[in-house]
Length: 274
Image (cartoon, rainbow, N blue to C red):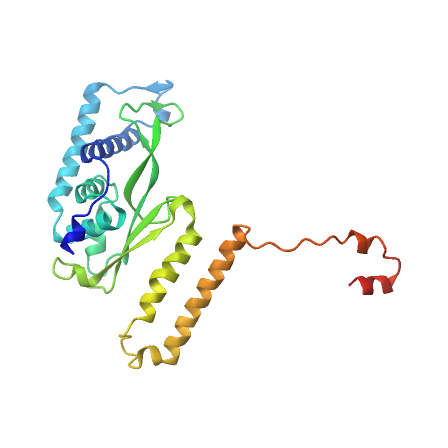
């Protein structure tokens, strides 16, 4: 609602913008000055080069900002509410992202079925970044919101996702009906716990309260629907057991078998011990 859209959390906007700008410039440095092109241990760019890179990054960001319409604003609003950032911070992150074009691919007819965002600690280059001979830079861990395909970066924080419900082109008038939004929290990289919570606390209750099951007129009374829900419940149970096993919460009782083994003399003793 309108009230929730104004409940924002997050840091100072000016600081956030500066950090994102530094990250964009840093990525450009890596692209234009590979370590293999020099024998020096460190390259410090001239102020003129830095200004030019910053200018190019600013032009790209403003071009993208001009493309933002009501569809983008809907995504930005949902992300801000779900993650706890202001809409300005989310917009700045999106227009600074090198995967910005994935948003248009998501909106296109028969486009991408999902659009993923990670919000987690990443190594960000400092504003005075210098490229060393091994390709590394001065960097520090900072929270960052970025677009991802979900297969190239390690997932250690929060995943915000948008899912299409049809192959229709996404427009300003249908984006609220055709696009679903969700949050998947895996803070500290605890993916199994995050998935278990998402399914047990969000998806299963939503499914069990679902009244409209499309062509299945009987709804929840249908045996196939009941079997499906039972299977999901069973999967969550198995997921919970697996997680607890991994966390060593289920331990087998230790048995001292030395007293039995030391007295084995003949085959009948083996049977008795068994």
